[in-house]
Length: 204
Image (cartoon, rainbow, N blue to C red; front, side, top):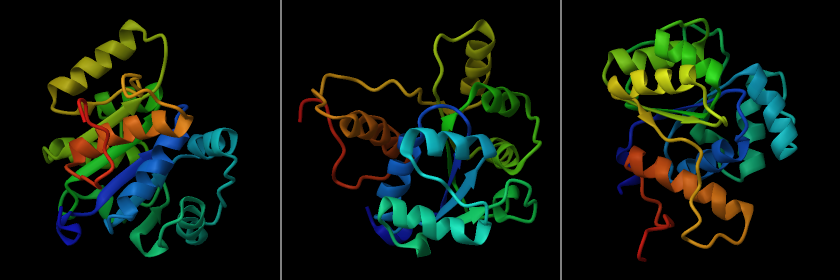
């Protein structure tokens, strides 16, 4: 892949379990020199602290550098937006962004996305991606799933949204938690059409 040709990607984190998936995705995309627009909910901050021992600052201006330092990438590839910043480019279909990933995606966020209830920037950005027929990927993490959860996922899938549940496989014989995380990130990268040369392939 030509690193310079991929349009910026929006990555949103909500309050479901699965913070390591988001951090690893950010790391691997930024290492490909792809510009990332990051949207992080208040609940996601709590999950980051609990699951990754990463206490993100409340100061928006410092967030990109903190995330970059934590995952080991150059902060110039990261832009963080406040969740009520309606002037952000991600709130408009005219922005040059073709892909968005919500990872992890809580069931509450999934429900609001499915019904078009745009009460914050994450939900507005997903609404934009759907109305513009762009590539929206949701990575839900919940178990068991209720009929309501499944109904929302089916509705979103019918609208062209890619549902990639956080269900890592074991056929690649993972040795560490990082191996399981990378399995899921590999699948997300496939649907972003990004190949960083490390994706695990069946039969390889």
